[in-house]
Each structure stands twice: as structure tokens, then as C-alpha cells.
Length: 289
Image (cartoon, rainbow, N blue to C red):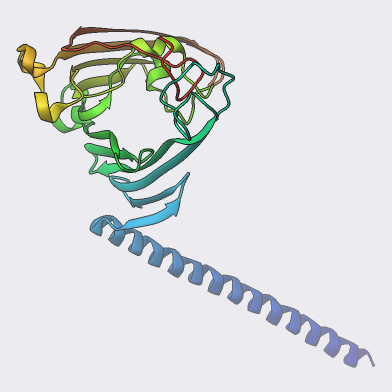
């Protein structure tokens, strides 16, 4: 009886040892499989970096990006639908955006934009955006190339340079995307600010990105095809030109929600034609200023 008990205990110990060995073998096998998977993934990642393969994903919109981040294509689009319900007298007339000739209630597209932007190597980015709010007359909004990281490229200080149609660096509200403004309409005094112009802008950030500086030269004539780019020619028939600059600084910051932002901008302009008008509180309708 005692011998049978000892034999049973020995057999049980043997089974436990065998089970432990099996579990150890399974753990080693799992580690080997994981190592093989990681090695294959690393190898593919290195191959993608070498071949600059673009991989697509959704990041606030569709974007295709290379593994090293130096090449990318992002598709941007926005549709802003607006409605006006004014209470105007019958004698008030204006360019109604919707139905009828009078200044009347209407629903219309403020913006229907489609564009692409991204990176062409580490030193160049681009943006092209077209507005189709008026279908028979599409408008180019942004069309520029930016040459950046030139300090790394040339080994000395050099600002980023943006060439093409772009915002002139004047005013915080003016250069803020209409996707992110606090109110539907911008303040009336932004009518005095230039918006997009064809030109060249040199800019940089410093003091741990808490300060920025811009200086640009721009054409003030919207009809470049007829009157030419008049930056270098002061002839009255060649439109006009402008020098515009902006400086901003954050002297105090507790976090990303509590900080003090200061800025100043100025523009010296020699235009061929000057016109200021605004429609306070309305996207369309007769000018109020």
C-alpha cells in the first residue's frame, strides 16, 4: 500500500514537471513567434522608408504619409451653408445671394472648398485650395510653396520662405481659418486688413516657438493677368505693391489654455485702387461700410 502511494506521488510529480516543461516550451515558442513578427515588421518598415511608400489613414481627414514623414498628401474640404433672414424695408435693395432682386431672406453656400496640402521632402511643403461656392466662377484661395528647415539645409540661420498666393501677415482674426473663428462673421475692422495676395513671405519662430516674425512683399492687384505683378514696377498701369510685417510673442504662459499673447502688424501699401466695404453681421447683402 505504501509503495503504491509513493508510486502515485512520483507519477504526479512527473506529470507536474512535464506540464511545467510544456508551459516553458510554449512560452519560448511564443517569444520566438513574437520576435519573428517584430523582425518582419521592422524589415518592412525599413523597406518602406527606403522606398518612401505613402500609407493612408484618417487623421481629421484622409492623409497619405511616408514612414519618415517627409512626404505627405492631405485632402481638405469644407462646406459652409448660410442663411440670412433680414427684416428690411421694401425700398432697400442689394445683391441678394438667393432668390429675387431685393434684399431678402436667402440660403446660400458661403464656402465650398476642395484642396490638397502636404510635404515634398523635409524642406518643402505646399497647399492648393479652390472655392466652388460660385460654381461658374471657381476661385483660387491658396496656392503656395513653402521652403522650410533651411537652417538644417544650409548650416546657418535662414527663415522659412513662402511663395505664391497666401494670407498677408496682418491681424490674428484675419489669418485664423474660418473653421476656427469664434463667431460666424469676422469683426468689421478686419475689412481694413488685406487678405490673400500673391507674393513672398519670410517668417520664423524663436524663443522656444513663443515668438514669431513675418516680413513679406506682395502684389495688391487681384487681376494679375491684366496688370502684371507690380512689385518691382511703380508704373500706374501695373497695379500696386505692399510690404507687410507681423510680430507676435507669448511673454507668459501657464499652460496651453492660460497665456498672454501680444502681437503687432503693419503694412505699407502703394495700391492702384483702394476700396473698403463690409456687411456687418451678414455674409451677403448691401455693403454697410
